Length: 306
Image (cartoon, rainbow, N blue to C red; front, side):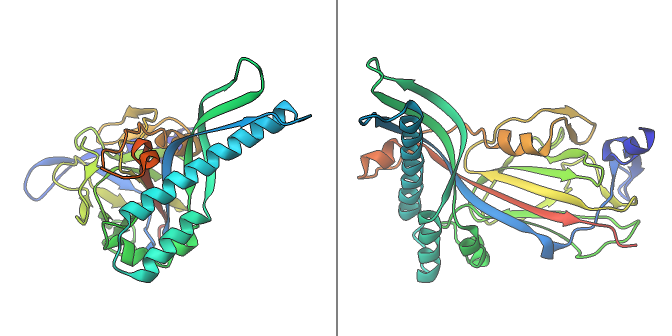
């Protein structure tokens, strides 16, 4: 158990003196970022409703399944409408690929908000929080174009100052989005331990402006990132959304936070976004009443060179 704990960054905090004479935390960072291994995805999170009424000899399960299918269809329609209104990009091929990717989207039910039968047990209704996941292969081919276009779906990027690192070197992380977003940066080590690097106890702001490159660590952070063994595969993950992200369980670990739940729960709870109604003046009444936010996730594997 003692050996495993030593792999945690939070147990490797120690004071170091910068050339300025100021004190700061020194975080032992056990990884090397390889940008070519980066993975990214976009999606939309929205509330949707569906209903269905019993046909002759139809079972309850069949009616409920049809209502859920209708709710998923509505979620896709909301996402398509949002994209068609918001994504006014000048590149015709990019716009075509964006629209097509959402037209062929899959839907994941994040939570069921309400479900009920009417008094006569004839019709069933369901309200869901859904994630509409476009065909990301179509968007991945246009990643650079979307990163430079604030009208495209939310796109975020994460990279480091060098492609390779050796023990004793320091790492600097950079992140950027094509439009304003709320973000959370997590680090997972080879032993599966999770740390939240941003926001942190000293750098609490999790809102980032679009088209701006942010550096980690910077003057607000009370740590540095030092490369050191042990060896193994690790990962940096950036979650981003146009609305505040859902809360996750974590504890203060000095200059950063230690996350106290699994990666699966983090991905799910981060998507527990509080959605507010769009305020735009749209002719489409369904769109005006719709509640939808854009979501993006990007991750990069890390490893130390021997």
